[in-house]
Image 1 (cartoon, rainbow, N blue to C red):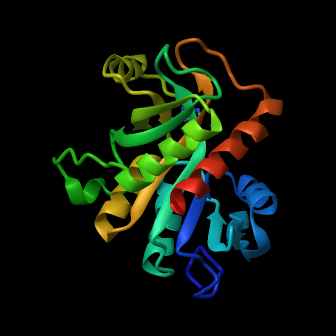
Image 2: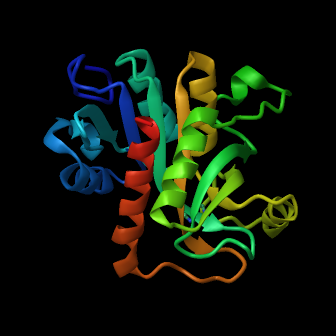
Amino acid sequence: MTIHIGAKKGDIAPTVLMPGDPYRAKWAAETFLQDTRCINEVRGMLGFTGTWNGHPVTIQGSGMGMPSLSIYANELIKDYDAQTLIRIGSCGGMQESVGIRDVILAMTASTLSTPSRGIFKELNFAPCADYGLLSAAHGAAIAKGVPTHVGGIYSSDVFYDERPDLNEQMIRHGILGVEMEAAELYNLAARYGRRALAVLTVSDHLITHEALPAQDRERSFGDMVEIALAAAFA
Ligand code: ADE
């Protein structure tokens, strides 16, 4: 057990999928894994371990924002020896070419600040995905026929951001979408020599102001889970 995860050592698989929402973790585990069991209920941040095509997999909620994700990813890596960590979540589209429901595979994650800021100080470290995971996820997404974009995203600390100039600069520099967790996941993976990737579905759009209807969210989320699982075991 750790401070935030109640699982015993060995209850967490080397491959961990991390949705922000703990109820999405429950849904994904019940829908895509076999022999599923709940391994964490601390603070309601549900985690489940089961198997996918015979491979052990854990799906653990991360909560929203980098401070929350950092807690779970640190403990998964340092206390449970997780090797492959894949964020599955939603993002806001930031380019006209990116549509609602499209998948974005985050090659890099720009950010103003992460919980790792104290280490980097004035250095603008460039957190990036594991190339093998990225390439495998791209192949899986194309095979599924899901419209997919690969490129840079922006990990923000603020959902209701009142600095339009910053979003404008991100858009101007070709950033595909905005979410709130990937940069810190990539920092931790780099620091501890693990594999990480963020697979994201566009749920709302900062230019067109469209939003994914509630009834479509489950289907889109399912595509992401399948892409992440295929990439992890490619
Ligand atoms: N996650 C989904 N949509 C988002 C947005 N517009 N900003 C930040 N995180 C998000």
